[in-house]
Amino acid sequence: MRILLVEDEPKVASFIKKGLEEQSYEVEQAYDGNFGLKMAMQNEYDLIILDIILPHMNGLEVCQAIRKKKSQVPILMLTALGSTDDKIIGLDAGADDYLTKPFEFKELLARLRALTRRSGDNGGGEKLSIADLEMDLSSKTVTRGGKPINLTAREFALLHYLLRNRGRVVSRVDITENVWETSFDTGSNVIDVYINFLRKKIDKGFPGKLIHTLVGMGYVLKEDDA
Image 1: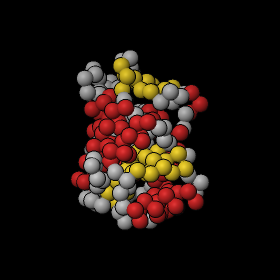
Image 2: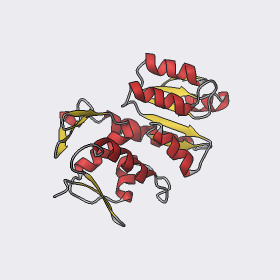
Image 3: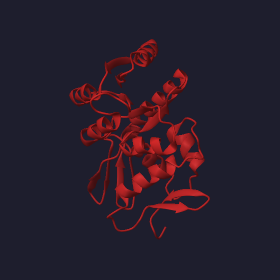
Image 4: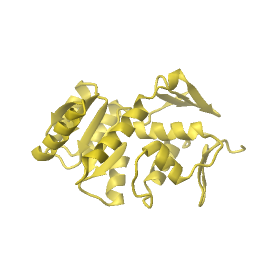
């Protein structure tokens, strides 16, 4: 497992690198945004850990630039800004998950395992579909009406879960346990934000909406007349 760590605080970077290497991860480091972006563009990584506050180019800008070229690589954002709004800004930039400083190393490991497990599951070449929406688990591609749709690793995992449960109402707790596979503040609106991300990509501009909200119950992926 090859990881890019972009973190400008030497003590934090050393702590993370040492801990990950003890878990048999291969870790490469960058201490500023510009160099981190260059490394991300020139090399292939299984996951990127990205601090927000960085010299020269902040983590949000780096994340947005990476997403223009590499939509599927999982990105875990580290932030000292703990409000829900701050986290959503990071997610909106294209991050798949966030971790607020300070954090326990075992929580970092849990987030990494969840992200890499989801991105590494090829489903044996299976294809999932509903209406004119199709997901190819082998090639990690999604199309609607034949048009390619670029999703982040977390968006892909969320859509995968909805497709697996198409026609069934899934609650926010269901999504937390099966897509995030770790605990976070279920009182926040992070899941709602991700649902909106998906809506913009797979419903906006297409005839017939597929993602539906049932107030007080959850979400369901179905055709309008289903």
